[in-house]
Structure formats: C-alpha cells, structure tokens
Image (cartoon, rainbow, N blue to C red; front, side, top):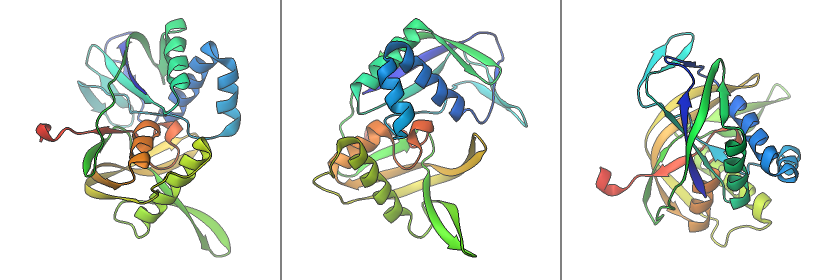
Length: 244
C-alpha cells in the first residue's frame, strides 16, 4: 500500500536541508507509535526494512548552496509505501493525531492523505526512482573490511541488488519468492550522496526497465529496491508508457 501525504509549509520560503532522511525516519516511527505502540516497538528492535519513503517532493523550489532547498510552492508531498497495510494505516493515523513534520528548521503540517492506486507491473515495466537506490557491498583491504557503495555501472551491481532483494523478501515473508531471478536495464542514472546520521550513502537516482520475478517487482515497489529503504532509499514509481 502507498499513500501520498500533502504537507503545507508553516511559513513562506522555508529551507529544507539537503540531508533529512534520518529525521523523517524517526518521525515516521513516532507516528506509528501514536497509533500502534506494539508495532512501533517491533520496527525499532528488528531493524528490518518494512517500509520506504520518497524524497520530499517540492514542485517549485530554489537551491541555496550550503543551506538546502527553499520551498516556493504552497505544498509539498511525501510518499510512503509498505507491503504491510498495518504500517501504512498506523502512519496515517499518527499524522491525523499529530499532523506536524519537522525537517531541520522547517515545519510542515499535514493537510491531506491519499491512498494511491496500485499500478500494473509487467515484464519490461519502466520505473523511475522517487529516492535514490543504494547498493552496498563489503570488501577486504589491508586486513580490514570496508563498505563500498555500488553504482549501476559498477561490476557486481546487478548481482548484489538481487541478493539484497532476496534477503529482504525472506526476512519479511519467511520464504523466498517462487521466481528468484530478475534484472534491470538502466536507461539513465545520476549519482547522489546523502548523509544519514554520521554516515554518507552513495546511491543512484535512475530510470530503468525491470525484467523477471513478479513477486520481487511488487515487493520492490512496495518496500523499495536496495539497502536502507526504511531510511528513505529505493522508492520507485511506475512510468506509464503513454507519458513518454
């Protein structure tokens, strides 16, 4: 299930910082706690990616170097998605109870929540990211383990993405999908770097076609593709071909 939350800026010309993923992650858990404390406790202790969310979608904006993004539009959107309906329901109820979302020094209030229709996903469906896809791997150098972020043109990207998705699927559903094979054809991508806590994550905003396992495609749409999706990475939308 996926929802769009419309948020109204408290004041004009608010500036949203470039790095805010951990702030939104923590506030979404707080919203869940308001509606379903037991569910929130599970999410906080299991460290699994049960949901994902988009970047804050600002239609009219101005980039302020070294500061962030100035909001010029009357409202902004935040998309939140999960394969578990109870999580989305708890987030929605939490926003109704406490409609405030703070990002840096910017404050927004919820004005509307809409449940979005599920798209048709078929062989060769065209996806576009609403937040960057992060694919991480470990390498040994000088007898130390180092974490590397892979881009779509990096060797091993496809194989590592497939392993990540199968692991996440089995963690949530307790089994592997019937069809475990898939691949993506990346049409274009843009590298980005986002700081979460004290760690920088390098990911990719991209447009790609998906081929293979329908179960993984649906799971990726609902829970995100790649690593750290509950921190606002890996959300995608379906691009209808008539939009081309």
